[in-house]
Length: 268
Image (cartoon, rainbow, N blue to C red; front, side, top):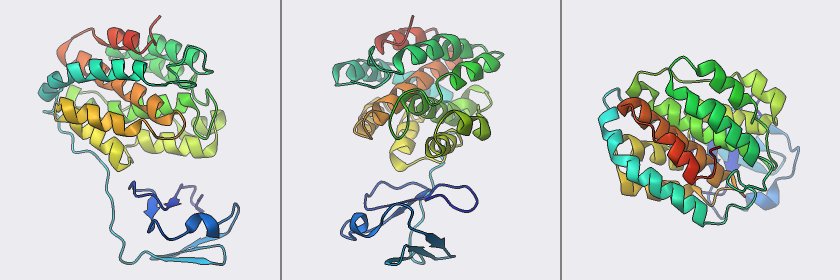
């Protein structure tokens, strides 16, 4: 649903929680009762959809997603190097058809350019403009409900902005009005939520695992994203892995992100 103040709200039978999701009982039969363009009325504790659905939200629990990352998290990042290497290899083993990792996909070439001209340069603190230019080149790139380029950027910015404080970096926020010009409204909003750390519980778990330096949990949480959409989970994971690796490089003055990009098939 698109609200009057230009926000996005999902009402779903699925259990995955997020700050922009209203989760209903799986047996509610929502999919049989709602049709496109039904009017929606939102009150303080009530949501009415069409003429047949009324949702009482007065006793609903709230989900807050902002990861608890502190400036002293950087030492723990040393523990996830092997996990990022393993996750990158796993992404090349599974079926990645039509994702950014597929050399024949619409978004593969553009994403490789984004990595070379944006991600790898971001190691230097004065290269944010080059990163932004490279990022906007892949907004809207690909097909589907959320194009692959948007998903890669969402995964990257969610991970980078969450951990930026640990390496004394400012978050990078792409202008929403420019995003809307280059992709669909829904995809622009979802990308904007991700960069502002309005995250669902799976993505929050990915980031918390990385911040805590927990290799096993990080791999498991990345795997939990993979079934999302047609290729969205794969693309989000690729972006997040690149961001985690870059943050580690900045923290420890390493040069491993290009190798990770190579494992993903995204380096020149």
